[in-house]
Amino acid sequence: DIQMTQSPSSLTASVGDRVTITCRASQSDSISSYLNWYQQKPGKAPKLLIYAASSLESGVPSRFSGSGSGTDFTLTISSLQPEDFATYYCQQSYSIPFTFGPGTKVDIK
Amino acid sequence: EVQVVESGGGLVQPGGSLRLSCAASGFTFSSYWLTWVRQAPGKGLEWVANINQDGSKKYYVDSVKGRFTISRDNAKNSLYLQMNSLRAEDTAVYYCARGQGYNYPYYFDSWGQGTLVTVSS
Image (cartoon, rainbow over all chains, first blue to last red; front, side, top):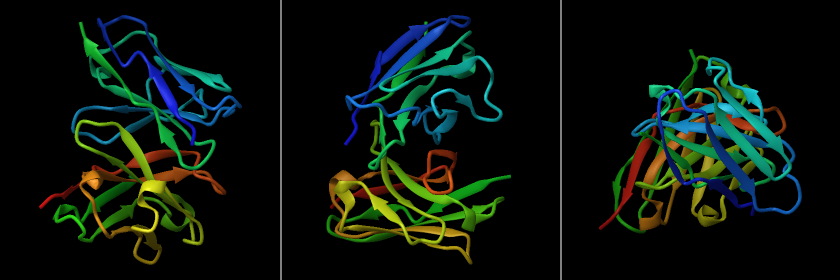
């Protein structure tokens, strides 16, 4: 199984800050661009933000962006907004079982 | 508007069974992969199972193989998860989600609100 790790596990930031979250696949071989990012707010369902590593889901603000391929990936929020405080998960769809990262919680400073 | 709505969760004793349902609307149900993802209280997301458009391909996480069965009824626009031999570690919110991709569900773009399954005596 491919294990996904994320860093940091949590971060505190202010409105307007640039935030970067990293996701890494354990497999030494590439997972290509089969990497997705989801946002989850407390008590709510996950919401797709980025698919195929860098494609922005329809309706998602352009301050969200994704990059990377192979084993290392990044989610960037260019200017953090109040509604962006949430937990972010990466997920690989390169092979079954699909696996999620442990999540990165973004808190308000 | 795409909608998926889960139901069927509840309290069940260890070793018991439960059947979850997911009712979909707003899209051509029979054209999409579907998936179940769960989240234990205070924990992260865990993929549980996928099913392809006609139900001929099914995949499961190892921890539920032989106990859970994913199925679908395209005539009723409904997805199911039959859960048998339930264990305490199956306690979670179970989400239904639509997969994008024809031969493979590359990502999940529409999610339900989830249904809580609690396994406890």
